[in-house]
Image (cartoon, rainbow, N blue to C red):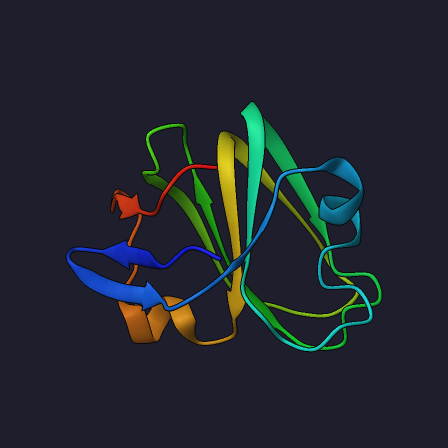
Length: 114
């Protein structure tokens, strides 16, 4: 459960790391709000679905250098979101985290790799 930092500040105290396909496919379905870090073997275009996720989240897409390439605030239940930028990491965060942590496109986040 890595700690995630940006500009020397803690953005997320802990996030559950998902590296396998089945846990990634399930994600937050039928669960309570929590922070997830998806780690893919190589950068890819990511399509997220919010089916059976009953709360809104913030999403941060990161490239292979852990640099923010796209932000999606307040992704609501039963929606689909597509990121056209290849992403190696995706953070699903509690709603409001992007704003409260002042995360911006171009920021580099730091956390230990798996």
